[in-house]
Image (cartoon, rainbow, N blue to C red; front, side, top):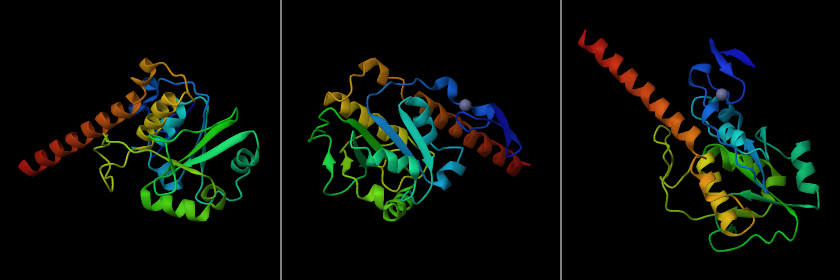
Length: 217
Ligand SMILES: [Zn+2]
């Protein structure tokens, strides 16, 4: 199902223009853990280089909601209030469960990880407003990878895009035995993301070309 978006036809799956639809690159991974992507409305509008939706498409066991304050969000509160669930929010900082060093003790519960899909300043605001998410125990990880997201200004080079963070999470959950994902499945997880980055860089260099062309004239 497509619709016209900014004068161009849009893919209703990845919310990108049909001309640069990334759906064919998506290789979904089945997980025991449920991921809930909390997307800032600004991220929703940023169709060109958002990775929250690509993450959602890559994870059949995921949900995606768009808002800033989730305090009264029915679906989110239903998940948090269900005693069969063990909910965490992925958030860096002190007093977090560092998954490189500490294990999630699920004890048969459904592990749910909320992931905030937003720029750093907006995610601080989202967590401040959303008391229900703020009160969840936090998980984090330390990593040495730097983002491949060359087209997006990251405040610090260790900030990863949502899809890269999710991949790191999946790898750590696999090490902990919470997930049993075949190693080979990870190989293509970032394909829609790398294709998107390459597409955007291609667009940028074509724009440079035309600018130079105009200047020469
Ligand atoms: Zn698409």
